[in-house]
Image 1 (cartoon, one colour):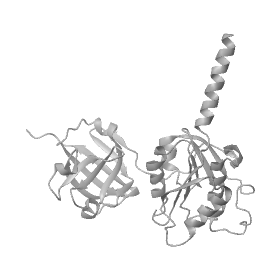
Image 2 (image 1 turned 90 degrees about the vertical axis):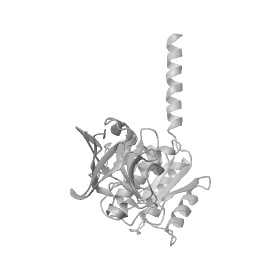
Image 3 (image 1 turned 120 degrees about the vertical axis):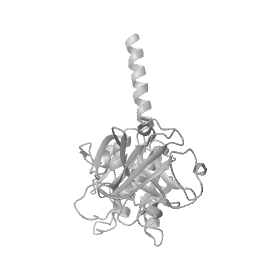
Image 4 (image 1 turned 135 degrees about the vertical axis):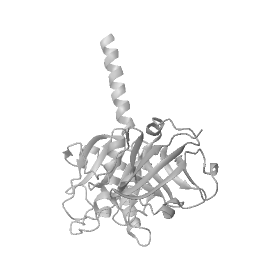
Amino acid sequence: MRKIRIYSLALVALLLARALSAQNKIVVFQSDFGLKDGAVSAMKGVANGVSTDLRLYDLTHEIPAYNIWEAAFRLEQTVPYWPVGTVFVSVVDPGVGTSRKSVVLKTRKGHFLVTPDNGTLTLIAASEGIAEVREIDEAVNRRKGSGKSYTFHGRDVYAYTGARLASGAITFDQVGPLLPATVVKLPFQQAVREGKTLRGNIPILDIQYGNVWTNIGAALLEELRPQFGDMLEVTFYHRQQQVATIQAPYSETFGAVAEGKPLAYLNSLMQLSFALNMGNFAEAYHIGSGSDWSVAVTLLPRQN
């Protein structure tokens, strides 16, 4: 009797795990297409052609042209906040039609990402983990009649496959052959502590306001034990060449400093960031973002 009960509990746990990682009929689109023409609408039309029961949403279509790194960041920024089972279709594909693989990655939590394996999965694979990666079998998972189209895989392969997966027309196993649990990775400065200095990357700018975001998380910053009002010295590098060095107080809010003055703060992702109160920090100090931008941060001694 006890063995039967244990077996039943194990079966329930397995079924629950499968249910939590199942597709949920939600598809979220990302691209560098913009909204000036019909490309995004065509992708959504293909998805609706698979199933009108799908719920279709946009992450963004304003990724700068060919900017794979920014596509990678926007996925990491967004994926964790969507329900498990959501399918993301991300198309920033300057190598469309070349030998780069078309894949679907399943995260350990159960999200699905349909995309070219060109570096787009760099950050989400690291932060969410890889459960499995499958190469899209275009003999099955490609829009019918599109075999001679070589430059719009977003419509013909990714939107179509993503919709089939999200709708339940195919299982994840039916996407295509299983690949090793690894992806193409873009190089960047990982967030690390080296003695009294923190080093990290500038993955993105808060472009609306010119704030500079880093990948240095709150837990790593806390190892320096800063208090609000303590001064941080930060040096910004582009391709390992120094661009600027500034000092800024670690602050709880923008209003903690005078208008136009710099501050360091934790952004909405709980990552160390830099801003000018009511000003544009990136513009003032000529700071950019991407895999080749980095920072070094040191906590300065308190003044008596």
